[in-house]
Length: 77
Image (spheres, rainbow, N blue to C red):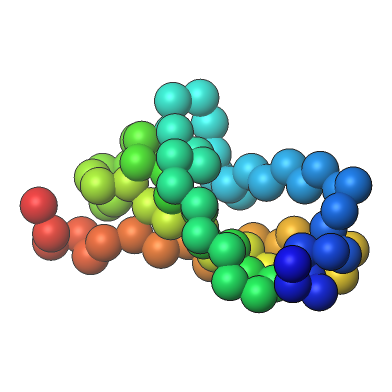
């Protein structure tokens, strides 16, 4: 078990997208790397993101902070 994983033992982090809402399927896929997480939300109802979005989070030692929202270019589709 990594040092980072050990530091989370007993902690129940609850991540949410800054612009999330019902039906966005936030958390359908999650990838962890060190103190970073990438979380998929395929149902984001945004005409500029017809394929959903992914949210990048970083753990600062005490809490998860949303760093960036990633979505495809508007002309994809």
